[in-house]
Image 1: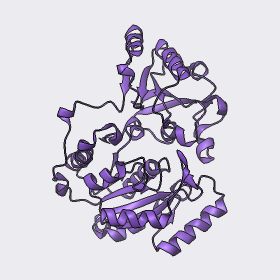
Image 2: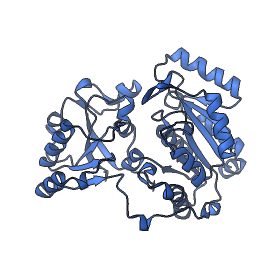
Image 3: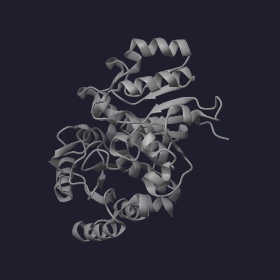
Image 4: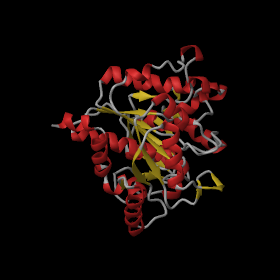
Length: 359
């Protein structure tokens, strides 16, 4: 038996692509929801796992919300908006679909900065249909927020941040898989979510950092880690990264480093991406430059490389891994293709106290 709520995920035109990262993440992993289907007419009839990872996972893709609900009775309880467009806003078509979902008695889960609970039409419709609106990025009053206190020094286990060279490169996926692999090894590993997708997936600890005022981001980062330390007494904490330290549009990595004080970094990089994902006029940073920047800013070492294989053939992936390991003298891998073993090996070398816990 499962206590997960059954949900459909709306990702029209973007499943498997950069702006579909929330739906992509939910199709791969969710502790809170059981995914009953993905809505994307451009990939109607396909299996979500095959689209993402060339391996079926049993989650079907449907042409529209009506088809996604057919034959399921009233078992589906939630509609998740699974896209993350740069605009952060809904289209008129999006609104129509969500109104239909409410009429079918589905709660709406929204990860955008455009809040449904501030929209009178949505609030009235939700009340009429007796459903709930959940704005994941809509935060508490600033009076309940915390500035940085220095309590991060109370956390005595290693903290590893998974940072990247761009947004939507797989930092969350690597964080999830690495945490699971460490747990499977026998370590008490906890992940801290820092974006809306991780929170929707059901991460026990974390907060969407980009929904906060700058004054509180370091403090809330610190608070999430301290809460995890006090509640779980973990052997190791994995911190999900956001954006990139060099990216001109995002500051989250700065606050993750400042508030989280990671002792080591794993860097995520898409070798086949020539320009920043949402900014095609801006060249991607080199892996060398990003590692140098991270190590200077954080005063912590980069101990592993996780690559995103978009736009790469299997031979190119193999060659790139070998080249990176030779150049940087640290493990490199594609966690979706090859798992996390090489990263974990170096984590145990870097933090021998963890290896002692296993013996």
